[in-house]
Structures are given as C-alpha cells and as structure tokens.
Amino acid sequence: IVFVITVCGMVKSIIRFFNIRWLPEAGGCILVGVMGYLILQNMPHVQFAFDGDMFLRIMVPPIVFEAAVKINKRSFHRHIIPITIYAIVGTLVSTTFTAFILHKGSMSFNWCTTIPLRESLIFGSLISSIDPIAVLSVLNNMGMTDSDTIYVLIFGESLLNDGVAIVLFQTLVHFLDESLEVDRDAIFDATMHFVVVAVGSLAVGVLSGACATVYFNLMHGCQTPMVEVIMFFCWAFIPYYICDMVEWSGIVAIVANGFVMDLYVVGQRHQQTTSTVEDEIDFLVNGNVNGNYEASRSRKPKQRCRSFFTYEGHLSDKANGHVHFILEIFATLMETAIFAYLGLFLFSPRYHWNKYLTLMSILATVMGRFIMIPCLSHIANIINRMSLSRNRSSCLPRTGAENPDGVHVDRRMQLVLIFAGLRGAMSFALVEHIPLYDTTTGQGTRLKPELKAMTSASIVFTVFVLGGATSYLMERLGYSINPNKEHSAVEIAPLMQNKQSTPNATSKRSSGFVSALRDGNNNDRHRGNGQPSNNSMRQRGTRS
Image (tube, rainbow, N blue to C red; front, side, top):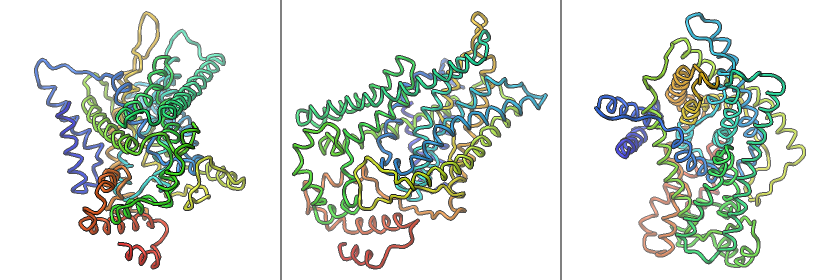
C-alpha cells in the first residue's frame, strides 16, 4: 500500500511538472492502481478484496471534514442558492432522470438485461454522488481560488451532494425486498426515513460542533498547542461515528460539524482583515503582520474568553496553523489512496460486463446531469434575483471588499458544471454496499455484478474523458490558463511563523520571491475583473 501511494505521488508530480493536461491527476492514480492489480493478480498466494467499511469509515471522513473547513464561508454564503439547489434538488432530479433513461434504454434492447426500476433508481442515486477532484485540480492550476464563482459552485455542490446521495441510496436500498409492495404507505415511510436521517444527522453535527466550541472556550489557555490539535481532531470525527452507530449519515454530520468548528473554534479572523496575501507579503518583507489585526487581538483577549460563539475562534495561533496543515496532509493522502484503491478493484473478474449496458449507463449518467444543470440553473437565477430584491443578509462578519450581489450562472458556467460532474470512489463504495439476493429472505438484487460494471464504466468515462477535456474546455470558453498558482495561506503560514522569530534574517533573500508572488497574485485576482490600475501597480512596486 505504501509503495502504491509513493508511486501515485510520483505520477502526480510528473503530471503537474510536465503540464499533461489530457490526463487528470486522479486518473493517473487510478492507472497506478490498475497496474498494481495486474501485478498482484499474477502473484501466488495473494488474496485481496474491496473493504467498503474501511473506505467509508477511515478514508472518507478526513476528506469531507477538510473540505468543510477549507471552503470559504463567505463565498459559500454568497453562492448558497445555486449550491443548495444543485446539491439537494439536483441530486433528486439527476437520480430520477438517470434511472428513467437507464430503465427505458435497457428495455429497448434485446441484447442486454433489462434493469428493473428499483435497481435503476439505486444506480441513479449512487452515481449522482460527484467527485470533482480532477476538475478542481485543473482550476487550481489555472490560478482560481475559493473566491471564484465557478470554483465555489463546484466545490460547494460536491460538499453537500455526497450526504444527500448517501441518504437517498440508503432509503432506496430498503425497497430491495420482494415481499414489499410499493404503494402509498411505502413511499411515505421512505420519505419520512429520508427526512429523519437527513435532519437527525444535521442536528448531530451541529450539536457536536457547539459542544466542541464550548469545550475549547472553557479550556482556552489550559492546553498546549499539541493537545489543542489532538482534541480538535477528536471532536472533528465524533459525530461521524455517532451517526454511523445509529445508521444515520455520517457525511451530513461531519459537514455540519466542520462548518460550526471552522466558524467558532478555528474562527474567521483571517476574513476580517483588509487583505490576506498582501499582509503575508508585507510580513515577509518588513517583518511584521497587519498591525490593526494584531492590535485588535491584543485588546480583546477577555472578550473572546467570555463569549462562547465568536468569530475570533478559540485556538491558539500555533495550533491554528498546525490544524490546517495536518488537515491538508491527511486529506491529500486519503484522496491519493482512494483513487489508487479504486483502480486496484476497478476491473474485478466478478463483474458482468455487457457493452450495451455499459454504453447505456454512461449515456444515462451524462444525460442526467446534462438535463439537470440548465433547468436548475434557470431556477437558481430567478430565485437569486428575488432574494437580491429583499437584501439578503449574512451572519458572518463583513469585509470591506465584499460584493453584496449574488451570482448569475450563465451558459459558460453551466457547461463547466456539466463537465465537473465526475464520479469517483464514493459511487464505487456505495455499489459495493448493495445487498446480494438472499433466497431465504427475498431481499437484495440479482443484478449486483451488472451494477458494479456499470458504475466502473461511468467512473472511468467521467474521470478520463470529462476530466481530461476540462482544461481544453476552459480555454475554449475564454478562461485564461495561468500556471502560476497562487500560494495558499496554509503553504505560506510556516514561512510567516519562522519569519516572526527572525524578522530581518531573510528579507533580502525573499525580495525576488515576494515580487514574483505579488505579480502572480495580482494577475489571478484581476483575471475576471480586467487589469489592475496603474496606481495600484505603482504602490505595490514602491512597497516592494
């Protein structure tokens, strides 16, 4: 396993270094896993199988929690209308259209097995879980950040979409029972199960985040930074395993918990400053941080201790930096392992392949999202215009650079969103949890091998074809390709901490790096808003 992850890291570095645009990094990890499968298959006395429980209980939680903490909460609130519509309504609509196309399409051909409506709905629910890691990596390489509309829409939808798809999948699996008659009562019970699981999981996550906030408030100043980091991760994963124990959705719970902990435990202090990267650059050059920010922190230590739910946060500065760094390491490691794990079992001999079902499943997967995105985008634009007339407010602290307007999803964005509907390891794990038919109880399905083959085909097509074409699509639509990726706050934080201890030791050596970083940041920041003004360029040049 360690060797496969090492090779995946090397392949990802090669793809990024040589700018291989047609092969996504996720696709490279899948190919490494396939090569590992071919090698292990020819080795004697080696047996391995897909462990769905390990996947869902160990690999997924760090990725989901890191995404919930990482996403820009102000940008998420600004785009909340289209994100919510895509993630909740869109998942239901996409499931319905995918199931309908698959069911009717399989009935039209005599050369393939007809997929019943129940199995079609289950396939539609599990394949509606999107995993746009390949597309997000392309956007990152283009210099886009979590303040760009298209980035926030894709990131936010994928964050909420997984929980909805899993709850819907768990609800539909209960219908795989020959003794169950699908009538009005059964549909009502399934609807109530969906609502109870969704609302209950959300409540567990919010309550856990509130308890973590109270804990860190009461223990503020009593713990070392190392203990703070350890307790932070303990509180992070508690709601996931609570919901897993009662058969609720741990994904929904950990997303809600991540939002609450990021707002009140980590805090939104970085969003209340007048600038982010500029202050970090000033620190590298001049040896100090934004004076107003430090002064405000020094004047308000008691207020932060008195109030439980404050956007100042309850972590020490050192623990805060370590939390983000460790989160990113674990999430990246798990993402790499997941795609290699996916490639390792992608072409299992236990699958039943049929070329007509394979083509029909790919067509249903793509067409379900192709129909869903334009329809719901039109509805989201209408609702957004209505909400702007009511002056929608935010509970987050305001910043001077905030744009109060909403977002209009135009046709270019809609086309990118369609290509961003990549399927990944979550769909693969869910199809493994479909029960096989039991002759004694009459529960389960006889078509699990076919469903697994259809899921694998859809994953391969979306990752390699749609993910590989995203970079060329963005360039064709007029989005500029900027290889100078903006450095994130997590990457630059260790430099700031080291610089704080020796403020004048490396200022001369870092001047060239700072100038290059500022130029790349300015180009990225003004990519969609025109070129920067001459005055701002002269001011920055004087400061450098």
